[in-house]
Image (tube, rainbow, N blue to C red; front, side, top):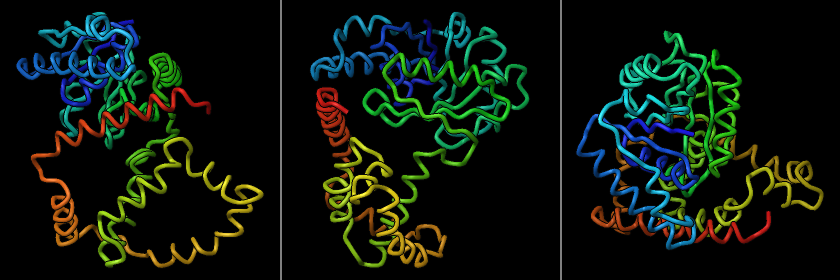
Length: 308
């Protein structure tokens, strides 16, 4: 199977790794030739890192499946599936999809990595709009496997299923979002947690550091292998309904306290930024991201060796 990666930034590089390690042929294209060449190098380096952690059997073999192309036409020529990763700007999406719809084979699925723009916003006028959808990854997708698949109202069910099948085949965890909704599912869940996190810090209830500790050494430990519904199902003697009967009133009282929808203020953002920079300077962010990826690799290795 042939995959085209359109856009060679962080997400494009990560998708190239996902498909190449599964043995698929990957053609990468970017309007910036220098960035594209650098992306190819980074993909090779990251595959080597994954091999060292036992998460890729043969990094050199996987890397041989990745090529860079001089033109968009060349990248799309034999593509069976396209993963677009251009900037989050509607006009850019509309332009690239108009071009891809004209160049790609009629049965090629055209998927976007967008984290917030619905497919209907940039595919409505296309003759091939039925094969267009969103396949939103979690960064980096070669370590965090969930992919949110969301079509427009006119997306063919076969395109949704084809994308699910592909994602399963390359080791990802597809989730179908049945209707277009801003933020899809993951970011809406993350947004709810972030709103409460900012609120608790703003009210002086807890520091940024202690809030992060509460999640990573509390909720996050369970969430690394079970979701919120299974969590509460196991947290009461007789399951989910029992939990809701026991704790529903507590949650309702908390919900009633949250009637506001004000945006995060500049002062609040500045306060939280200052606390984060006190813990980690800006020039240490790249190193910490590598640390994050190493920890994720170790966690994935552990989870692979554990039974569900």
